[in-house]
Length: 267
Ligand code: SAH
Image (cartoon, rainbow, N blue to C red; front, side, top):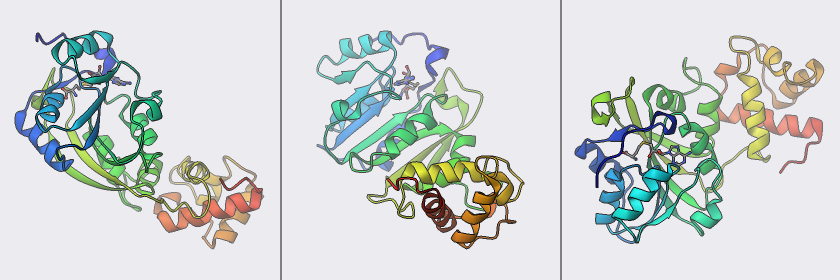
């Protein structure tokens, strides 16, 4: 198969480092017969390795030209030419226990990650490539400079670990930045403090909306100041603390207090 010209608008940087492909498969603990979803196979470097590993493979590729080439190369590949941000995953990967492997386009990686994390029964584990700076934000712990709403939202839903980091030379064309592969093990029953993930995310985002401000001030950017004060008090959290200092238990309490105070439906 001839390798097509990489298209910028689809975030195409093709992996061309065989050891990286092996390490991704190893990190994903791929076993014969596993149900595996690959997102953005491109010219098929990972796809080829996954087929050799004899998994039950499904792929989603947005680029029509790339999808046509993949079909030509592997007529029996279960392939959806679709946008992974909008895909109906019940149709693409029905049932439970899927492993996801992807070298994602950087411009959509976070969006796709957040969608996958919301289906912990369907998706068991994810091994995904990110721009290193984004991976660092995902992994950051409370109190660290890079810690933000993304870190908190992701860590509430999955155990995350860094697998390895690659320089630009592992890809064609070479991106401008380093890339990091992360593994996510989805928590079967994420604890959002008894409220929905959506309510939890709302409070987390508000808490980080105005960095370096007090929790009271940043929460007040999205609700009445009086309500923000009540939510902090009910959650037992000092309203003068900075949002960046809070960890999962505090966000769970804030989310629960906010839902109780506003009588939002908890789910
Ligand atoms: N996995 C391949 C290609 C990486 S480039 C490799 O490692 O070599 C990213 C791939 O994702 C491209 O093939 C691109 O066309 C595809 N892509 C981009 N946006 C997408 C989306 N929203 N949904 C599905 N695939 C997408």
